[in-house]
Length: 256
Image (cartoon, rainbow, N blue to C red):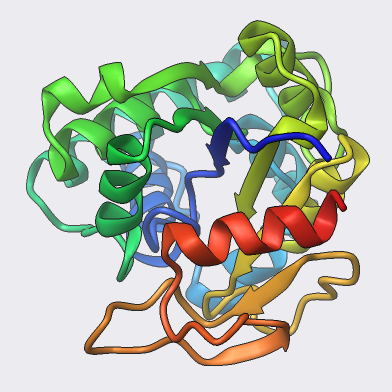
């Protein structure tokens, strides 16, 4: 049985509830700034989350929900510019402290560091968004806690493809059996499982009804000692919040 060496975290929806009140708001501000007159409601945004990646989401919106828009000649440049503006508005929101970490996230990361585990990030969001979230919740020094930050367009195919996890594992010189992944969505778990990683799921409002077949455990949140999680699927091994003891037990069960 391989020894657990690293914890690999998704970002949006896993570390923080960034989608509804972060990315969606930033997209709408970018649309307003560009004079487009578009508005992504919470319900519409939930449908757009079927696609990972911000630029990809804009394209999906125009292909499926806004067929009347006349695409400019330099459509790729238009999408890239719009997404860059959205990233700027998102980092401004983060700087204002609008989006905290989810319950239990900071505690688990602290426990992992104290126990000597290596940390990494595997996400489809941009490096700038990762930096904004981490520095405005954990502090600037926390960026150095994560040995590898796999983000954005560093790989050709985004989740549900396994590429981003494969990239992180390669950079860390680890096998899949030496790490465990933390995700929140169907696309996320498809990606991590395709990379042969034991996976912990914490759902959110947008992903609560997703199919998480194959995950080691499904929780409503990581929880705290005085605010336990709700177990949705799997074996909590007698624990009531996601601590290192439970992470180690889940890894052993998945790699026995």
